[in-house]
Figure 1 (cartoon, rainbow, N blue to C red):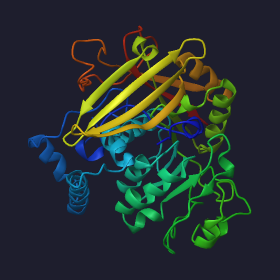
Figure 2: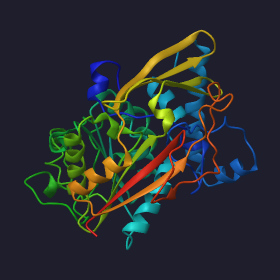
Figure 3: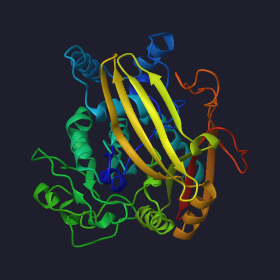
Figure 4: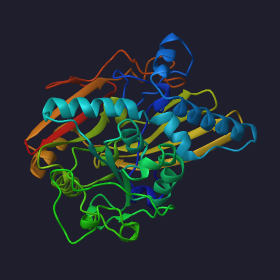
Length: 399
């Protein structure tokens, strides 16, 4: 999730956004994105219909998690910053809905099963990906070991034992992914049963391939290059994480690594980016949730380097304030720059899906900012500049 100071500049991280998965449901969910926090949860008939699609076990897990959160508030302590981040920023169901849509539109011919989540943080998206289909596998890559370990204890543990056999977390830099190391697991039988050779674009190597990743001792010392992973159907870098890369050279290098990891049968790389005139000035937005308030603060913007500093804060009541829970130093890339870098990295087909966001200067937005959930992402060739927008950029490979 990022740290303040030097670690934030080195780490891969996430952005401003909306509420976590179990408050939403269905294919019309909006993804994690700028300014896009849904309203506080109130039970109605549509919610009940969504709940009926979930298993009883999952509902019990969510109730336990929320009860634990409420206990922490009553005890006068702030919940984990990672937990608060997930509640206020992320919407994995919405992200997955769009990822599936993009894959079927631009690749097609099969169901996407293998996901890689770069800059994954607590890998909430990866955990949701494998939870909703027993055939799926996921790989998470991040530079922040603390957030990866938090994922193992708090996200992956809720998927069940089967989840450990289908999801791998690697600690390392997206610019040197082959050197990333598998995060140490706490159970002897983790990762058993994942046949990494059942996919398509996997390259054979003198690695754990022959053991099918069933040898946990081998895995404990594995780098990503040694693990003989399947070619990925989808690779994503969400929550504006590519803005952590400040130079064009690094951005192209990262895109090349993503391109080479995609399945030889065809795959997609998807990233998000935000912009608009509001992205180039000081800005402070907030969103209230039942137990806390979330703040997005854009502290400055340098028009020469196009670098900005973003901080996320959380407040519980009037006395408990967690300032600078996450601080990011970003280089705000334009869509034409991203497209040029993707083409240079080898992507021949590139698509832009964009969504206009509410005007941040409208009356009251500084106090309580809500996105219009009726406005959907649409594929666009042209889009007039406005106060705020959010976009997906999709690169298609090997088609």
